Amino acid sequence: MELNAIIEALLIASQDPLPSDEIARLIRSRVAEAEDVRSRETEEGRESPPLADWLIALGQTDAAQVAAAITGLNESYASSQRSFVILERPKGWKLYTRPEFGEFVRQLFPGRKPERLSGPAMETLAIIAYRQPITKAAIEAVRGVACDGMIQKLLDRDLIRIGGRAELPGRPLLYETTDLFFEHFGIRSIDELPNASELRKIKLPEATEVADQAEPETQLALSAIGSPAASAGNDEAPENTES
Image (cartoon, rainbow, N blue to C red; front, side, top):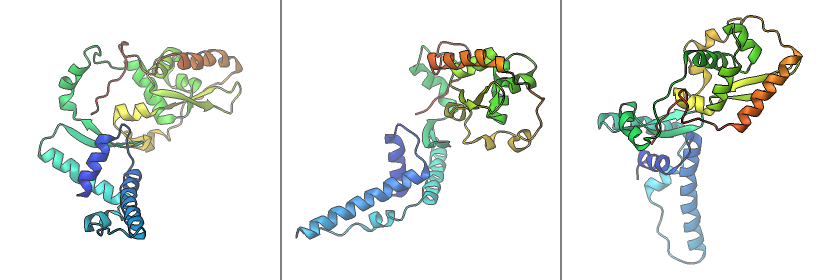
């Protein structure tokens, strides 16, 4: 068996993304298992054929070889015009359908309509993405308007989450992006955002944190816990298609 075919089988069978290190470990584990079986049979006096050369070679599989094999698979998919591609996300590699097939795949989910974030929600999300972890007051200092509603919508859609509390008067909540954010926008880390290194260094307007902000932010936190991770029926939830 070839390494790329084995990796393809693992990605198809797994419901969750697989990092390169984990894929390599699974392959080496299979080789070790075969070696243990052969050793046990030999100890018991039973004849056991030697392991195949291709299987022994897989015992040295590492993350770099996995990444190279995935590159080869994607090149093969592109040349044969396959409908899917292997993409790396924060939690690892996964098979996804190509965007051009989205209109057909969407027919599997007739109850879900294409949904997009509004301009204000995207603006709020961008501020959080580039400057996370960040407080609501700091977001409002940049936007110049109250952001309670936009933050709540982003929490409801699981694009942001509460990442703790700032060491400031009133201990305001800190907001950061979620794994779904990376999945939806097709990036592995914040560093892959456009001009990330520059925009993360720009000095933000001063934000005044006061103790009486604790009450509305606590309400936001409770609302996030009580609401679904994503509202399929809301007209601003993101959409993602995967195989």
